[in-house]
Each structure stands twice: as C-alpha cells, then as structure tokens.
Length: 326
Image (cartoon, rainbow, N blue to C red; front, side, top):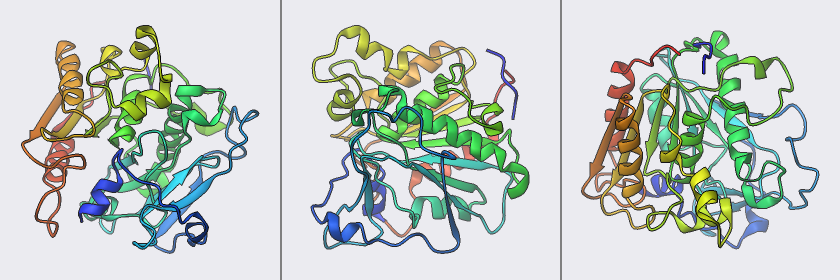
C-alpha cells in the first residue's frame, strides 16, 4: 500500500467497563460544551448505511448522582468530533478514541483530564464519538472504523488552520476504543466507506498509535466478551473471530505503536497487549510495550494528583519515534 504522508473515575470512563446509569431523562438535559471546546459532526449529513437503523440515540449519566459531565453515549446516530486546543502547540495532533465495550461510548463533550493533560503537553487534541455495531448499521462490525477513518481525515484537513503537521497525527485508543484505534492502525489500506467530499481524499493511516489497555483479539481465551459479542455475535465461527482480531492482520507498513496495560487488568486480559506486540515484533515494526504490575483496567495509579505514568512514556515515544515512509 502506498499512501500520501501526511483522577481515577475519568481514567475508568475511558475503559470498557463503563456502566450506564438509569437516569436517562436527567442525562439528556446535559448542555452542549462550552469554550474552549469545539464540537462538530463527523458527517456532513446522515451517517452512511443507516437505512435500517431504528434506535434512538441517548446520552446518559454513568453515575446518576455523579459528575454531570461523566457521560456515555448509547445507540449513537450522530457521531461527533471534539477539539481541545493547546496553549503552546508542539506541532502534533492526537485523535483520542474512548472505550465502552462496543455497548456505548464513554465520552463527554466537556472533555476530561486525559485530553486536558495532552493539550498541556502541546498536542492539538481531538476526541471522537462513534457508532456501534449492534445498532443495525449496514457496515456491521466495521461501522466504528468508518467513523475513525472519517475522523482522522477531518483532523488532517484542519492541520494548516490549527498549526500542526499533518504528518504528525497520532491515534490514541482506550479499551474497546483501542480496538477501534487498532483497526485504524492496521486497515488504512481499505477504505471503509465510499468518499462523500474532498476530506475523503486525505489518508487514513495514523503516523503513530497509542493503545492503552486495548481490546485486541477476539480469539478465546483472551477475548473481551462484551466486545466480541457486539462485533461477531454470541456464537461466532473461528473465521469470524479471526477477521476482527487485530493481531492477525498487521501489515508490513503499520505505523509505530505504543502499548500500555496492567498485569492485573481483570476486564481486558493483558495478553491482548502481548499478542499485538508479538505480531508487531514479528514484522520488525517500531513498537513499545509497557506492562505495569498494578493499575487494573484504566491503568489507575494511587496518586491521582500527577499525570498517569503511561502518558509521559507515550509523549517520549511520540517525540522520538519516526513513522516510516509508505
């Protein structure tokens, strides 16, 4: 493939274990984001392939009595992308993809501490919402990949305007969002949707990828059950599982990949990260794996006043890694 070069609760919210609160009515009153955030739709009109979709989108509180910005999006019909601008841009951008086990997207239009810290480091940060495979979209398991490809194209389309290098665009995925980011990192040679405008002429290959406590494989015994069921059903064939197992489809021109997980993760087994790193290593691709002894799902550290340990390591990786020409 030749392509143009171009605090604890918040951490857990990025993961696959987000719980939908019953207070839907209250959650739907959450107001739109205020400055300095900017939220735009991913698609200029209706998202593609929605002719058979009948579900109604909901915004819910993850805790009925908690922070009103601690939200999850369910039955997503109108995915969006949020921008957080850095005070001192460093010339690079990061597209963040949150998790939710493919049951929901644990994200807020008001941002969170992770995108805030990345912006403090100088990154122009985009956070995306995405559609879910169980809601009847024509693309089925590839529907989130459609949104991710559209999102990274939107990011690159704004490089000149926002003052970052379109050849220094990273994707950072968390939990099931790590699976979406992993697909974006390995399936850029395949357009997941038909082009609809000039933005869709831009490349979808990230220059770098960061996968934090990611869902990677759909193969037993290490598959994350909810994600696997959402993607391929309750009783899939081995072939169906294999198609959506990222470690089995790593191309020779994948970008540099940073992986961080905890050995005591009881939601997504750390073997997911090990399997992907081994697949990258077999291809002699630039990659870095960090396995923390503790941290669970979310890589939660006891000192919530400081930046997560993985963040400084990821920052250092992005500064020294070089994305090979493709």
